[in-house]
Image (cartoon, protein in one colour):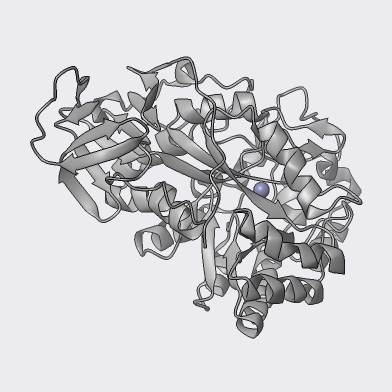
Length: 443
Ligand SMILES: [Zn+2]
């Protein structure tokens, strides 16, 4: 296949080049390529071509409070591809008494339903010597990132800072990567005590119960750990100005933020469907979002992931205590369409978007075949026509969920999406989908 006349948005700049795909890979990327006999030619004149989008943070079909999040690997990756995401990195779930290895086997079996390519992060939500000892072999198998939580003590998922330091030491000695959900549990406990009982069924209380100081405190603790152990630390879903200032005080910290922290704020909790926006960490103030946008344009954010974990309307009950509402929002399908629209609105350089949602996640998580339109890499790409920017895009969604938090924003959905040489979206229509492949992380 030959794609001609498009503007390629590389992470380092834009370039008018043609793209040749042979089998599953890019084989030539240069100007003025001549079609070979029998080659399919796609004219991309006036269009922008991005490398396949990588969402480094999804939770397909995970158990929360005896329910499952609404997307499994089948439905979630279908909608991912529709929005241009050709690779996701999902998280294992470590149940009681499981080894890390067992948790990976189980997650990998579920992920076989995936239509886009996928990698895995390993949740480290219990502290034992046996689990620590497994880290080297897990890294050898291509799972190089381990996630710890500084909160969710009640759910049995929290590690103390002392325990996290031990995990960091081990990971560091194997050149792996430590990911952290950074919200200090004690800060949350104290703030929660100040919420009067009559405000319990108000979703706005969710935000008050998890203050930005909890993010700041947890990140400062993580910086100490990073410096002591020399471990690389990746803070997931950074959301507050306080958290950002803490994180940027150290060069050991990599920062991921999410579309919901850039676009939404805590006023949505006062809406009729306020309960639907309950996710942890909570949405913040518009000032926090603006600090994050500024950080993006100053190259101080490393990736944008979605923390995709949607629930349907009937799953997120109203009128129940805020701390009983299932936590999570969807986002994988709109990640790219919503962001590219914001990029246009804010006149940000498009290569910066490529960097944040493709090249950098591939580099950080060692997905060597991904993240760039370059000869030898997997032929994953997204073609958009800037003229397709619209406020009315709801009918473009293929998600099985019945609620979307971004309908008030413009979006630019892809015209074409290609996964390892296979067209999965053609002229804006989802095609019959292939089977995704596990992509191991390489250090
Ligand atoms: Zn998450």
